[in-house]
Image (cartoon, rainbow, N blue to C red):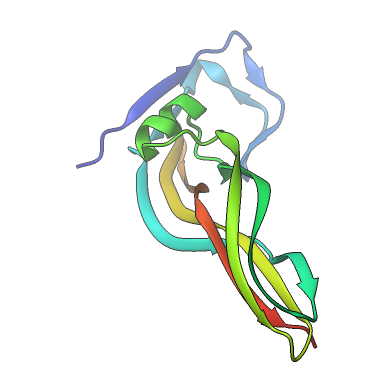
Length: 167
């Protein structure tokens, strides 16, 4: 079910004096008997749900009014973590550009009743995806270490607005 990519690292050094690969420590080992092989499982994406930015207040007043508020908002798709894939391959896996950004104009209709101070607020909404992959580091003639790689991708999904009473 999972395909593995294999990367062989060939060295010209005769001895490893000391190194640490993700917690696996080796010291003073002749390399003529050891080769390092790194393999990865096929990356997998999973839709997690929505993520929201903080609320931003764009207008506040204590008067009876019914109107529409317009504002330019800049958004950016983003990625946190690493799964050892290029941004191009991540874009193909997810189906959207993980580094895209843009500016949009939002129109927020609102109505204040005039009895107390009210605020118009908005926040950005993003679709959240989890990308997982497993990395295996094998030193031939020694042990294998398994590491789970995870990253989260966020795709812009619009604006949410509200009118709230000031405290």
